[in-house]
Image (cartoon, rainbow, N blue to C red):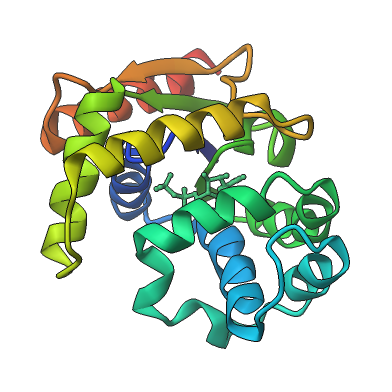
Length: 209
Ligand code: CDP
Protein backbone atom coordinates (compact mmCIF):
# COMPACT_ATOMS: atom_id res chain seq x y z
CA UNK A 1 0.00 0.00 0.00
CA UNK A 2 1.36 3.42 -0.99
CA UNK A 3 0.08 6.35 1.08
CA UNK A 4 0.71 9.73 -0.56
CA UNK A 5 0.43 12.76 1.69
CA UNK A 6 0.75 16.27 0.34
CA UNK A 7 0.05 19.72 1.65
CA UNK A 8 1.46 23.16 2.46
CA UNK A 9 4.00 24.06 5.14
CA UNK A 10 3.11 23.14 8.73
CA UNK A 11 -0.25 21.65 7.75
CA UNK A 12 0.49 18.60 9.89
CA UNK A 13 1.34 16.33 6.95
CA UNK A 14 4.66 15.19 8.44
CA UNK A 15 3.13 14.18 11.76
CA UNK A 16 0.26 12.39 10.05
CA UNK A 17 2.66 10.59 7.70
CA UNK A 18 4.87 9.45 10.59
CA UNK A 19 1.91 8.23 12.60
CA UNK A 20 0.38 6.34 9.67
CA UNK A 21 3.74 4.76 8.86
CA UNK A 22 4.12 3.56 12.46
CA UNK A 23 0.53 2.31 12.57
CA UNK A 24 0.83 0.27 9.36
CA UNK A 25 4.55 -0.60 9.89
CA UNK A 26 5.49 1.02 6.59
CA UNK A 27 8.69 2.89 5.75
CA UNK A 28 8.29 6.66 5.61
CA UNK A 29 10.04 9.26 3.47
CA UNK A 30 9.77 12.97 4.27
CA UNK A 31 10.58 14.23 0.77
CA UNK A 32 10.95 17.82 1.99
CA UNK A 33 14.24 16.72 3.52
CA UNK A 34 15.63 16.04 0.04
CA UNK A 35 14.99 19.64 -0.99
CA UNK A 36 16.22 20.96 2.35
CA UNK A 37 19.43 18.91 2.09
CA UNK A 38 20.00 20.13 -1.47
CA UNK A 39 19.57 23.73 -0.32
CA UNK A 40 21.94 23.15 2.57
CA UNK A 41 24.72 21.96 0.28
CA UNK A 42 24.36 25.14 -1.80
CA UNK A 43 24.34 27.43 1.25
CA UNK A 44 27.36 25.65 2.75
CA UNK A 45 29.44 25.95 -0.41
CA UNK A 46 28.39 29.59 -0.86
CA UNK A 47 26.55 28.97 -4.14
CA UNK A 48 23.43 30.87 -5.12
CA UNK A 49 20.19 28.95 -4.59
CA UNK A 50 19.13 29.58 -8.19
CA UNK A 51 22.39 28.33 -9.74
CA UNK A 52 20.83 25.49 -11.75
CA UNK A 53 24.04 23.57 -12.44
CA UNK A 54 25.22 23.67 -8.83
CA UNK A 55 21.73 22.83 -7.54
CA UNK A 56 21.43 19.78 -9.81
CA UNK A 57 24.83 18.49 -8.81
CA UNK A 58 23.94 19.01 -5.13
CA UNK A 59 20.67 17.09 -5.62
CA UNK A 60 22.45 14.27 -7.47
CA UNK A 61 25.19 14.06 -4.88
CA UNK A 62 22.99 13.75 -1.81
CA UNK A 63 24.27 11.10 0.56
CA UNK A 64 22.82 9.69 3.74
CA UNK A 65 25.13 11.94 5.74
CA UNK A 66 23.32 14.97 4.36
CA UNK A 67 20.18 14.14 6.33
CA UNK A 68 21.57 14.08 9.82
CA UNK A 69 21.64 17.73 10.64
CA UNK A 70 19.22 19.40 12.96
CA UNK A 71 19.79 22.50 10.85
CA UNK A 72 17.76 21.01 8.01
CA UNK A 73 14.57 21.49 10.01
CA UNK A 74 15.13 25.19 10.64
CA UNK A 75 13.25 28.11 9.16
CA UNK A 76 16.03 29.27 6.87
CA UNK A 77 16.26 25.86 5.21
CA UNK A 78 12.50 25.57 4.57
CA UNK A 79 12.59 28.82 2.65
CA UNK A 80 15.77 27.85 0.77
CA UNK A 81 14.26 24.43 -0.06
CA UNK A 82 11.31 26.12 -1.67
CA UNK A 83 13.68 28.10 -3.94
CA UNK A 84 15.60 25.02 -5.12
CA UNK A 85 12.35 23.04 -5.32
CA UNK A 86 11.16 25.42 -8.03
CA UNK A 87 14.03 24.38 -10.34
CA UNK A 88 12.66 21.67 -12.69
CA UNK A 89 16.09 20.04 -13.15
CA UNK A 90 16.45 19.64 -9.38
CA UNK A 91 13.04 17.97 -9.18
CA UNK A 92 14.04 15.66 -12.04
CA UNK A 93 17.27 14.72 -10.24
CA UNK A 94 15.30 13.70 -7.15
CA UNK A 95 12.49 11.76 -8.83
CA UNK A 96 14.10 8.33 -9.19
CA UNK A 97 15.01 7.90 -5.54
CA UNK A 98 11.51 8.92 -4.47
CA UNK A 99 9.85 6.56 -6.95
CA UNK A 100 12.14 3.73 -5.88
CA UNK A 101 11.16 4.37 -2.27
CA UNK A 102 7.45 4.32 -3.17
CA UNK A 103 7.90 1.05 -5.08
CA UNK A 104 9.17 -0.91 -2.07
CA UNK A 105 7.38 -4.26 -2.03
CA UNK A 106 5.74 -3.76 1.35
CA UNK A 107 4.53 -0.27 0.40
CA UNK A 108 5.49 3.13 1.81
CA UNK A 109 4.28 6.44 3.14
CA UNK A 110 5.67 9.55 1.44
CA UNK A 111 4.90 13.14 2.29
CA UNK A 112 5.64 16.27 0.30
CA UNK A 113 4.07 18.52 -2.30
CA UNK A 114 3.79 16.36 -5.41
CA UNK A 115 3.55 12.79 -4.18
CA UNK A 116 -0.03 12.18 -5.32
CA UNK A 117 0.41 14.12 -8.57
CA UNK A 118 3.94 13.28 -9.81
CA UNK A 119 5.88 10.81 -7.66
CA UNK A 120 3.22 8.18 -7.04
CA UNK A 121 0.10 9.00 -9.06
CA UNK A 122 -0.77 5.31 -8.78
CA UNK A 123 -1.08 5.49 -4.97
CA UNK A 124 -4.39 4.10 -3.78
CA UNK A 125 -4.49 6.44 -0.80
CA UNK A 126 -3.93 10.17 -1.34
CA UNK A 127 -4.47 12.74 1.35
CA UNK A 128 -4.05 16.49 0.91
CA UNK A 129 -3.56 17.97 4.35
CA UNK A 130 -4.28 21.64 4.79
CA UNK A 131 -5.06 24.26 7.46
CA UNK A 132 -5.46 28.03 7.62
CA UNK A 133 -2.21 30.03 7.29
CA UNK A 134 -2.71 31.38 10.84
CA UNK A 135 -3.09 27.91 12.36
CA UNK A 136 -0.04 26.72 10.46
CA UNK A 137 2.04 29.72 11.54
CA UNK A 138 1.09 29.05 15.15
CA UNK A 139 2.16 25.40 14.89
CA UNK A 140 5.42 26.28 13.20
CA UNK A 141 6.12 28.88 15.91
CA UNK A 142 5.59 26.26 18.62
CA UNK A 143 7.74 23.74 16.79
CA UNK A 144 10.62 26.20 16.27
CA UNK A 145 10.39 27.45 19.83
CA UNK A 146 10.57 23.83 21.01
CA UNK A 147 13.82 23.49 19.08
CA UNK A 148 15.29 26.60 20.66
CA UNK A 149 14.93 28.97 17.69
CA UNK A 150 13.95 32.57 18.27
CA UNK A 151 10.37 32.96 17.18
CA UNK A 152 8.58 35.88 15.54
CA UNK A 153 4.97 34.88 14.74
CA UNK A 154 4.44 37.65 12.18
CA UNK A 155 7.60 36.69 10.28
CA UNK A 156 6.61 33.02 10.30
CA UNK A 157 3.14 33.82 8.95
CA UNK A 158 4.76 35.92 6.24
CA UNK A 159 7.15 33.03 5.40
CA UNK A 160 4.26 30.62 5.14
CA UNK A 161 2.28 32.88 2.82
CA UNK A 162 5.32 33.48 0.64
CA UNK A 163 6.16 29.79 0.49
CA UNK A 164 2.53 28.78 -0.29
CA UNK A 165 2.56 31.23 -3.18
CA UNK A 166 5.93 30.10 -4.56
CA UNK A 167 5.03 26.39 -4.20
CA UNK A 168 1.59 26.81 -5.79
CA UNK A 169 2.70 29.04 -8.66
CA UNK A 170 5.80 27.22 -9.86
CA UNK A 171 5.64 25.72 -13.34
CA UNK A 172 6.88 22.23 -12.41
CA UNK A 173 4.90 20.06 -9.98
CA UNK A 174 3.04 22.93 -8.29
CA UNK A 175 1.44 22.35 -4.92
CA UNK A 176 -2.11 21.17 -5.61
CA UNK A 177 -4.28 18.25 -4.58
CA UNK A 178 -4.42 15.30 -6.99
CA UNK A 179 -7.90 14.93 -8.47
CA UNK A 180 -8.47 11.76 -6.50
CA UNK A 181 -7.02 13.09 -3.22
CA UNK A 182 -9.13 13.43 -0.09
CA UNK A 183 -8.80 16.88 1.49
CA UNK A 184 -8.13 16.88 5.23
CA UNK A 185 -8.44 20.31 6.86
CA UNK A 186 -6.69 20.21 10.23
CA UNK A 187 -7.33 23.84 11.26
CA UNK A 188 -9.56 22.78 14.15
CA UNK A 189 -8.01 19.39 14.86
CA UNK A 190 -5.33 18.41 17.34
CA UNK A 191 -2.78 15.73 16.47
CA UNK A 192 -4.99 12.88 17.67
CA UNK A 193 -7.98 14.22 15.76
CA UNK A 194 -5.96 14.70 12.58
CA UNK A 195 -4.50 11.20 12.84
CA UNK A 196 -7.94 9.64 13.42
CA UNK A 197 -9.33 11.47 10.38
CA UNK A 198 -6.38 10.35 8.24
CA UNK A 199 -6.75 6.76 9.41
CA UNK A 200 -10.40 6.72 8.48
CA UNK A 201 -9.50 8.01 4.99
CA UNK A 202 -6.95 5.19 4.60
CA UNK A 203 -9.38 2.55 5.86
CA UNK A 204 -12.10 3.92 3.58
CA UNK A 205 -9.80 3.78 0.54
CA UNK A 206 -8.73 0.23 1.42
CA UNK A 207 -12.34 -0.91 1.84
CA UNK A 208 -13.28 0.60 -1.53
CA UNK A 209 -10.51 -1.20 -3.41
O1 CDP B 1 7.13 21.21 6.71
P1 CDP B 1 7.37 22.18 5.63
O2 CDP B 1 6.31 22.15 4.62
O3 CDP B 1 7.71 23.54 6.12
O4 CDP B 1 8.68 21.78 4.88
P2 CDP B 1 9.02 20.65 3.85
O5 CDP B 1 7.87 19.73 3.63
O6 CDP B 1 10.31 20.09 4.32
O7 CDP B 1 9.24 21.45 2.47
C1 CDP B 1 10.15 22.49 2.32
C2 CDP B 1 10.05 23.03 0.89
O8 CDP B 1 10.55 22.02 0.00
C3 CDP B 1 8.64 23.32 0.41
O9 CDP B 1 8.22 24.65 0.62
C4 CDP B 1 8.68 22.98 -1.08
O10 CDP B 1 9.00 24.09 -1.88
C5 CDP B 1 9.80 21.98 -1.20
N1 CDP B 1 9.26 20.63 -1.46
C6 CDP B 1 8.87 20.30 -2.73
O11 CDP B 1 8.95 21.13 -3.62
N2 CDP B 1 8.42 19.05 -3.03
C7 CDP B 1 8.32 18.12 -2.08
N3 CDP B 1 7.89 16.89 -2.41
C8 CDP B 1 8.67 18.43 -0.74
C9 CDP B 1 9.13 19.71 -0.45
